[in-house]
Length: 111
Image 1 (cartoon, helix red, strand yellow):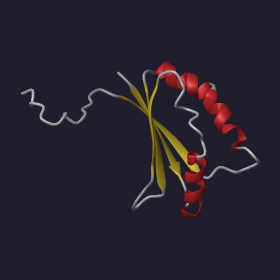
Image 2 (cartoon, rainbow, N blue to C red; image 1 turned 180 degrees about the vertical axis):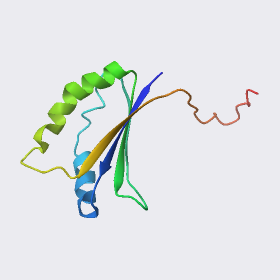
Image 3 (cartoon, rainbow, N blue to C red; image 1 turned 60 degrees about the vertical axis):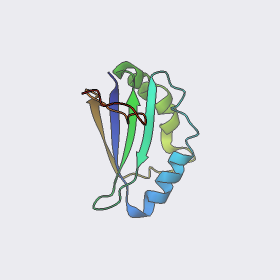
Image 4 (tube, one colour; image 1 turned 90 degrees about the horizontal axis):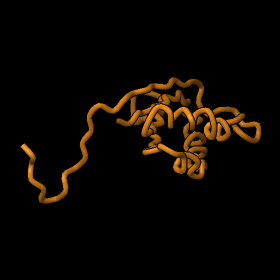
């Protein structure tokens, strides 16, 4: 089964727009990585300053190859002398043990 990595980023209100701009400008760097399955940047709507960067990978090995290679290049030094938009981060690692997708219209319930 797939693995999920969620990077929890603490982002002050004045840096939110900058963080989103930087992610928008990432130019698809992860999409071509072997084993990559999904990406989402999740913006907080109330009660927290923490963004979630959700990625799903075919395997832990695929994620590590990205983290130790292309990701380091993409994040190396922030580019142009820029400081990070986030003031802190934490990485959550999870395994997918169950999943579901919407049924096709008209499909019968299997039970």
